[in-house]
Image (tube, helix red, strand yellow):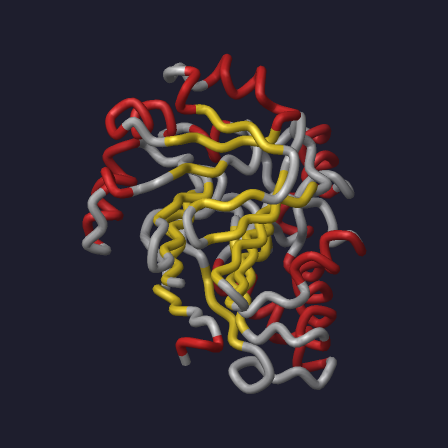
Amino acid sequence: MRVCNLASGSSGNCTYIESEKARILIDCGKPFPYVFNTLNELAIDPQTIDAILITHEHIDHIKGIQKFARTYNTKVYAHINISEIVKNQIHIDNSQFVFFDNTFDIEDLTIQPFALPHDSKFCVGYRVNEQDAVISVCTDLGHLSDETFEVIKSSALIYLEANYDPEMLMSYPNYPPFLKKRIHGKNGHMSNLDCAKAIEKLVHAGTRLVVLSHISEHSNTENLAIGTVAGYLESRNIIPNVNVRLDIAKHEQRGTIFRIKPSSKK
């Protein structure tokens, strides 16, 4: 698989995943021109995208879907629990929607959705595998539950939320108290330290590559996120770039391109 995050954060989220036979987007929360141009940077014809998979109904995850799907007649996948909300927010032909409640295939990709604790109507992450090559996209969650850990622990690559620094969140003047409480709650978002503790657990289960994702533009910075996570891991005798590689998903530009190969192709 070839994998690249196109954007990550409260201004929009989108991740590109490609196998031998399939090309998909997980979320499409940036405006259509941004997604079009960023795919072109990767030499990807947007018309070849087989499907867009929605994690949940918040605008930073669906903003660009209507224009994209209308332009290219792209299939749009969403969990059945948000089917009515999605149809009300994204005005495309009903035949383009695919609603699921369990694992499904798109060409040679097997995709396992799993519920995440987040303050939306319903939110999922995705475990995507091509044979035994596995990646997981796991953002917008208040905490790493035991159930989620069991699903993603075998992943070669995980996009994992490191949303906020608690001090920056509480001191940010433009967030009202109820919003700060929501973000900080168990069904809100994960802090940098929450993310670090989750990575510690995942490293012991075999994960070796984590991309810190959905970093807040207002209550975090890339340097603070990576510094907090790396510092915690070092305190637990887990050395970044030795025991685990850490990377960053950017707000307004595509991230690193990763290639995750099945063992039969290595």
